[in-house]
Image (cartoon, rainbow, N blue to C red):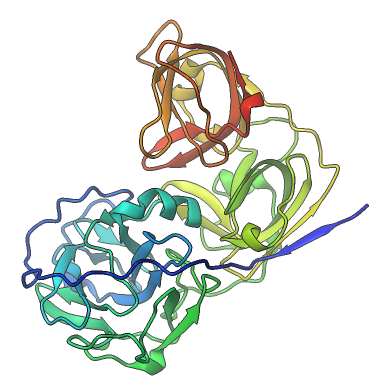
Amino acid sequence: MMTLTLWLACSRGAPPPDETPDDTPEPTSETDTDTPTGGGGGGGGGTGPADGTLLLTEVGDHASLSQVKYVEVVNPGSQPVGLSGWSIVRYSNGGTEGVAIPLGEGDLAAGAAFVVANLDGAADYESAFGGPADLASDECNGNGNDAWVLAYAGETVDTFGEVGVDGLGSDWDYTDAIAVRQTTATAPQATWVASEWTISAGTSAASPGSWSGGGTVEPTEPSESSIRAVRQGDVAIGANVIVTGTATGIAPYGLFIQEPGADLWSGVWVYTGASFIDLSPPSVGDAITAMGTVTDFNGLTEIDASALGGFILASPGGDAITPLSIGLADLLADPEPYESMLLTVVDVEVVDTADTYGEWRIADAVDNDLQLAVDDLIYEVADLDVGDPISSLTGPLYYSFGEYKVEPRGAYDVAL
C-alpha cells in the first residue's frame, strides 16, 4: 500500500500592488469602528502595563493573497494583560504620522496571541490560516516597507521597523515575506532591534496566533491521543499530540479527520498551513496520522500541525465514516459535540443566498427560526435560490466568525 507523506511547506505568488502614501493623522485613542472577527478574551477591565506588557511577534505581507496582511501581538508573561489602552500603529512609506488600531477590551491570557488582520482580506486570511483573526481592520493594510509600533495610551512600547524610514531594502523589509520575533525575546524594544527578528520570504514561517516564545510555554513531546480525548478537553490546550482517523473533508489549508463509529466528539480540524499548495493533498477516505499542537482557535478546537513543523501521513483505505443524519433542532440545541464531524442535515430549505464571503443559510423546513450557515471552505455551492428545498446537506461541521457552519465537499453533498 502506498503511503503519502506530507511535510508542511508553503508557497508564495506574485507580489501585492504597491501601497499608496496616506496622509493619516496622528494616532488617537478613539475606538476602532471595524468589526472584530474573533475573541480577544472575555471579562476585561485590565489596566494595561500594570498587568504586564505585550510584544509584537509576527508581521505578515502575503504575496499570493495580496490582501492578507496582519500583525500579531503576544502576552509573554504569566498573568493576563488587559487590552484596553493598547493599540498597534502603522507608519506608511517612511511617514511620521501613524494611524492607530485599538486592540479593544478584554484580557489577553498569559502566553496567548492576538492577531489584527486587514479587513479586505478577512475571508482569505481565514482560508489561509484555518480561522479568523481576532480583529479585522481596514487600517491593517501595511506592505513590506511600513513600520509598526505597539503603543499603550499613545506611548511607544515596542517597534517593528523604523518610523520615518521607508523600509524597502532595509534590514526590516518584509515585502512578500513573514517577519517573526525570536522566541528568546521577553521584553519590548522601543527602538528597532534587527537581531530579534527573522524575516523569511514566502509563507513557510507564517503561524499567526501560535507564537511560543517568552518562556511561558513548555514544549512537550508528542504523545498518542484519541480525537475524542482532544475534543472533550481531556488533553490540555498546548499539548502536542499524534492522532489518527479518516479524512472526511480536504481544504486548501487543512483537513477534517474523524474516528470511526460516528460517536459524538469524534471529529477534529487539522490545520496544516499552506502545505497542500506544493504537495498533493490526501483524499477523502484516506487513513490519516497527524502530529500537532492542540489549540483553541477562536472557539474551534484544532490540531495545529504547522506549529511543530509537523507532518501528515496519509494512505488509502481508512475506516469508513458514515455521515451522522440529524435535524437542525437537535443540532442547534448543542452543536459543540458535533464540531468537525461529518453530518447530514435533513429537511431544510434555503433562506439566504451566498454573501460576499461565500456563505449562505439554510433553515428547518418547518421552523424557519432554526437556521444554520453553509460555507465554501471546501466547495462553493451555486445556483440555489431562496425557498429552494434541500432534502439533505452533507459536510463536516466547522466553526468560525462566531458560528457553526456546514462545509459541503462537492455537488454530491447537496440533495435537492
